[in-house]
Image 1: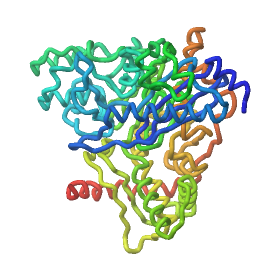
Image 2 (image 1 turned 45 degrees about the vertical axis):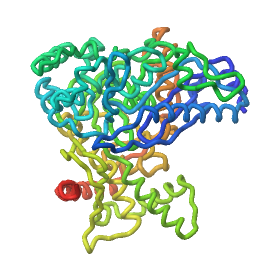
Image 3 (image 1 turned 60 degrees about the horizontal axis):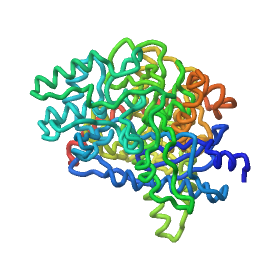
Image 4 (image 1 turned 135 degrees about the horizontal axis):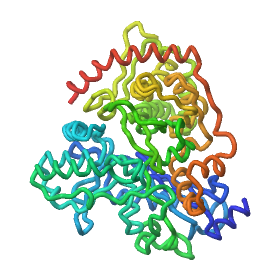
Length: 537
């Protein structure tokens, strides 16, 4: 047991970060040197109901409590003490989506997550109106599509927000949002550090034409930058997070400060020290996205590129792909079922490690095999719906190694299409690219293949699998340093990442050539994926 960490927990000098990801809700407690002191998690899954990907709000609170109780149990096991107070708390979650409430705080329609691709008309109209790319998953696209659809709930909307904004609101009573998450609801102005005023006026004009009296300014959460105060944990919020507590000392104490709630893109930037110009990161889990902090605006508007911001408001080009590891996970679940049929039980981590490493034995080009990981629609390749698909010719080299390589290739193939726009058309150069998320947990595999895919050096830190929750814990800790006049860039570079950013792998020439060969096959085969979506309804 580390006595110094125990003393910090008792004194309330630790920081708590909770992130609601697509398949796990993770809680991380960090100590005064910003390393992890304890952790907890809770598994959950989205569901498809009436054609909409959603999570029920009671599941949100069950999961939050589950992850927090798992964390408290870890603290008790490691240090023999209850966790009743911390220095600050941060809440993060999947960006975008649509949570709309009436003036009494009632949810008007089921939560529509980022995964839905049902707002094509709204996204097109708004993009043309604003001369700014509005992706289908953005909150404003969901709102405007509901208006275009004539949905009855629209007239009753008093407030709409993201998942992180919703949880933060219920914990603190504050309707606020970190600027990074806010930039995925509605375009923001990096100069004013709030929503773009001109585009808001344009949207209000569109709404008036529809005969509605809504005003966007009163419906969106207030924008805050990293380090600003975002309220404190209320007594009601403490009961929501930790009802009654699991120790005689009771539950978590009210009055704890909270930092601005952020999206998973912003926490990924914090967790990889990618908030300064010419830095970037790739987050790879259920979805995969790359962030590049820009030195200057892009020369054009691209439907494949989102413009968002860092947690302190700097412009960021984002390539977001809806699909990443879901199909990969499904295949590994199938292999595990086969093993269990023979009475062989293997830990999940070991199974993943063995099969990931098997991919490195495969042919660099994948032996002529082809895989599409599209569980949902994919705007980058203009597909409204997805169908997981594996294709081969009779003479393809169908081995386990080649199979695993192309299934892993499929997780990053669509990202490659978007990133080529930044590197080839816009000439964007990055000094470093860091990877985090579940795809990188098996050491050296996802990292090596991504380096080949993007033709760039890729670093992965030891915290790769828990980056988001750690990232929002860092943003909670930054509130103290912001008060002292320290920039977020200085805080991360000089206090958190004082040592190595992790092992860096440079592109292997054979892998790079093999991935190029695979991408030629992948782009040509997109017609097969479109046909599958058309005929497998």
